[in-house]
Length: 369
Ligand code: GTP
Image (cartoon, rainbow, N blue to C red):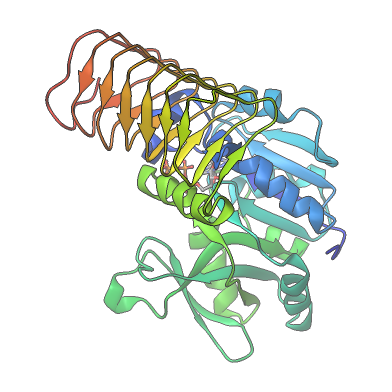
């Protein structure tokens, strides 16, 4: 699938406010999708097209990303461009210029999961002699996105950010990946925060130098908790349809029961009598203790569900500990390193912040601790 010599710049520095409280302790790009951080999946996809260098534009929780990916991941050299302050979606591209200077660049949001055909996108970009080409995806509700009007030659004629439904020129939205010629990067104001979708793309569209490549395959945005769950469960249903995927060195007791689809990550443990699934993802090194019951839930790496506990429709953050005999109802989100004491019962939609300890029942739905 090799297509072209391309460097990629991945925007990885946002605060991810819509994923709080999970994102207080974990950068969005390390959020797992079916048991693996979204950015691992992205880098592997880029590598399959011959991208051999990725620049991570980092800021918030940068150290965790650096620790996870190091200098190289999956044969791709990783560089880090650390902004002194968050520069938005365009500023980081100009700020990191020293890493790619006068080459064509693939810039992308790190919080999307998209198997874009970079070869086809590059061919369209070249045949249109575009300064920039935006990957597009058709969605039912375009209002939270940048929406385009595309002409018959795949040139974007209009680029409207987050329009009202009545004003949306189509249902084709910015999928969060762009090919940029140096001439497009020159158009990004330097030294300040820039939202490329507002300050650069509409102007390029007006000049007929912006192309749109329609990507009709897999595409997920994991920007909020509902979309994050949807990405996990939709992919789980396709990757583990009618089966359970069990990772390397995972230990599953013979008396445990797995309802499909389910994923149990590398080195995870599922003890005697535990019942997992349907629609359950157990992260790497996570532990599900004796007789625990977990359904429609996402357990991040290193989390633990105590014996006899029941977890339904929840997200359990990295290294969070759920004691024994705990009951967690649908919609609850327990952030990383939190600790829920034995026998505590949580109402639905309870949010627990990182490192918090909860030692008594929470009966009011939607409560934030
Ligand atoms: P919200 O606060 O929930 O909107 O999330 P966010 O801060 O991540 O913003 P958004 O979803 O718009 O970001 C899209 C992509 O750009 C994500 O991969 C972010 O990590 C990244 N991003 C957003 N703002 C910045 C920034 O100021 N600097 C860098 N380097 N990346 C950013």
